[in-house]
Structures are given as structure tokens and as C-alpha cells.
Image (cartoon, rainbow, N blue to C red):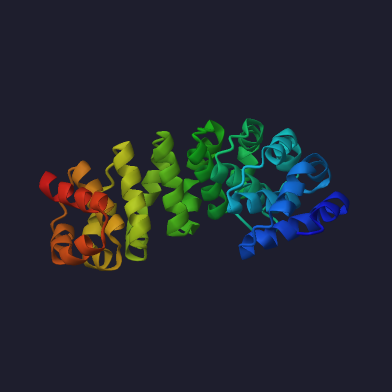
Length: 295
């Protein structure tokens, strides 16, 4: 921290990136170091490779620091980053070689729109989606949804490859993808058809939090998935027992909004009412009560 100016002014971008990433990871504020990175952002971004830039902007995002000069330089060099970046890197939040991913995530985390960067992701969507794994795709579409960027080509490619994503993806990733579609008002029929097709696995092995997110996405888009909700009803005891009040409230609310009575689910809500009320926030309790009253 004391010698930050010298380290940043004379240092290699990769070494600087590793240093600020370590500080962010360890919760070390080091204000002078981050200020020097911001001051020398033009050289740093111009000379650094996508991985170094990604680790740096991710560190700023973890610290909650917008760093206007750094992100302006990222925006300026966006075409190079996306063109040179590994398709796997365009989407994920951390780890080599997922460089562009870190940048997209950091922008969304800090609310930095960076239109040129996202335009480049949109431009290379076909290659990216074809070669990317479900986690890559989930993190990228999450970033788009977070910033309100519809990115039609990207989502069209996701729709095209939906079968692979749902079949291979973890439930958290699938929930993120359908949630992004819902937030942007994209119905994506093939994607939701694949969720319906794999309903048994997704619900039986799923975390109540991500099941609730999937149900919220269906509710937001007005999509009824009979088999998916049938399995929610089937595994209601497990879901309510393991889920927190927010997940249970959202699940019950989604069922009520779509007109799905789900008697076993609501019987379990009644059974665990004391826990739900004791641990839940007023909005969570209100949502659950409303769902009971509505049905």
C-alpha cells in the first residue's frame, strides 16, 4: 500500500491484477493501490491481456468501487477483449481463462452498462453459446438481465441450445437462465419445454431456492409447466422442510398466481407455519399468507 504508486506505474498488468485480486479476496481495502490502478488505467488496459483486466475489474466489483476511468478503458478496448477472449471466459465470474466473463460480471455487479462490451458479446453470441458451458451462459445472461440488456442474438442462441444447457447444467445455472429470460420478458419456449421435460430431476435433486426462482420465472411470463408443478407437489414435504421462508413464500405465491392449488404443498406450509413465521420477514410471511388466501 505504501509503495502502490511505484508498483502500479512500473508493474506488469498481470502482477497488478494478481495483487488487487488478492486484496479483494482477503478483504484488504488498500485505497492507495486501487486509486493508482484507476489513475494508470489507460496503460494498464492497453497493455494487459483479457485475464488481467478481468481479475482487476472483478476486484473493484468485489470492493463495490465503480472506477470510471478503468471501466471507460475497458469499454474502449471491448472488441479486442471479446475477440481474443476464450468463449468460456465471456460468461463466468472467476478463474482462468474466463477473462471476459469477469468483465461482464463486474459491469453488472457495479451497474456499469458498457454498451460496446455487451455489443461485442452480442456480435459473437453464436460462437460463444455454441462453445460455452451452462455456467458461462448463465452468468452472461444474468449480467444482461441485471443491466436490462435484451441482446436478441445471445438469447436466440440460448434458445437454440436449450436442450444441452438444461440437460448438462446445474439447477442454479438453469434457474439463472430462465430468471434472466423472465426479467427481460423473453418467453423462450424451447428453454421452458426442456425444463418441463427434465422436471423430475430438477425438482427431486433441486435446492428449494432455485426451484422457487424457476417458479417465479414461470409466473412472470405466465408459463404453466404441468409436470414441473406436479413434481413440486410430489416433493412438497422435502421442499418446505429444507427451504427457507423466502423460497417457500415465492413457491406458494407462484402457485397461487398461476392458479395451481397444490394441496400437499400448502399442507406442508401449514405444518411448518411456526418456523415460517418465526424465521420469515414480514414480506415473506405476507406473500405466503396471500397465496393461502388466494387459493
